[in-house]
Image 1 (cartoon, helix red, strand yellow):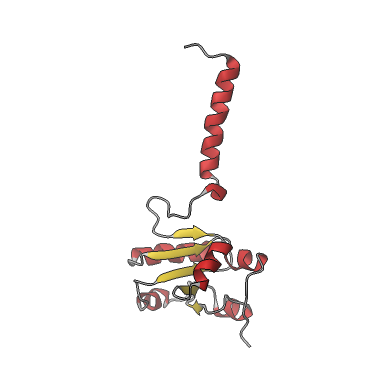
Image 2 (tube, rainbow, N blue to C red):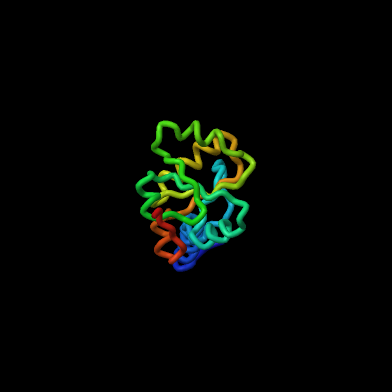
Length: 143
């Protein structure tokens, strides 16, 4: 079968755009990618999971960051603390944890570490507290 140059270009563009869309986080499904034991979610989904009341919101920022503003009902375990692993190990591995930090880096690393410790239900807030606040979601401050 002989294809014209135009048909070849259209076919190539379709193939390339399909791959780009698949890699685009906006087109990502809310399931963990292969080999990843946690799910990245945006503020809206994170908030819906939080509002269930049965999930644990885990803030892995510093105490100072937490005091300046945190998600209501969250617990603090500082990812950079030398006791992080010990404190995480005390948590119930059967619960669902909604993990966040300031921008998403520490919480992603915390989720990776927790998944290696056999935590099965982990959600990471994409963009962290910055994305949360930008979306106008509730923030509490320590008085």
